[in-house]
Image 1: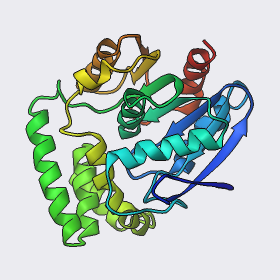
Image 2 (image 1 turned 180 degrees about the horizontal axis):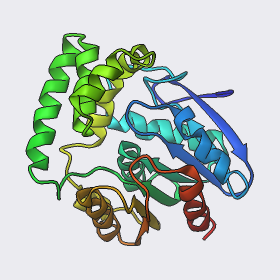
Image 3 (image 1 turned 120 degrees about the vertical axis):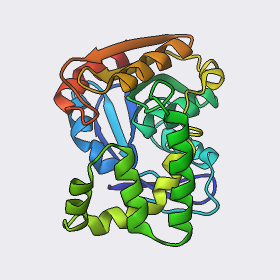
Length: 260
């Protein structure tokens, strides 16, 4: 990240700009940084000014207690102002929930696109699962058991126990533990894990909700529900894609939408 701006509460935010055209700010999901979205930004660069940033508490950005979702919305407002005051938003996974909340809050954005914001309404036992995760995650972080917090998240995503044990032995594990406190931020952004229909009704700008055709049915239907909950929503399926979507497939769909 080669640029910095400051959020309303004094938190330093790192960001990077590439390309030219209408400005789009990309928000990452859990356990990731702006760098995670750099390949997608590169794919958009021929059509958009793509901005990636490190959300607070991760990467090169700072953090200021106490956390609140409103602070992350203010972070987005600061980045929008820093890049000229006119932007569209894209968010992946819990980052999708964040950009929808930002739009509902009235930030000056032109358009919003999300990829698989994981609202669990249509997952059997989804609400109960989210409640148990929230409780256990809070305990693990309060006791500074960062590795346990990461394990809880990996299980939530469906990773098997053998793969989790392998992850603990991998070179990436220390980085995951370092980012563990930010899991509470993503959990807060997701609320109770269910689709905030009343909140989404306040989003006045066009919204594109994209899902992968190879993703679980509950996640595909969650994406459809997002498009139906906002006044100006469009639903799109990228055949063969999963939650780990390929930038070369997602990029053209986003470029088409943001140029509209």
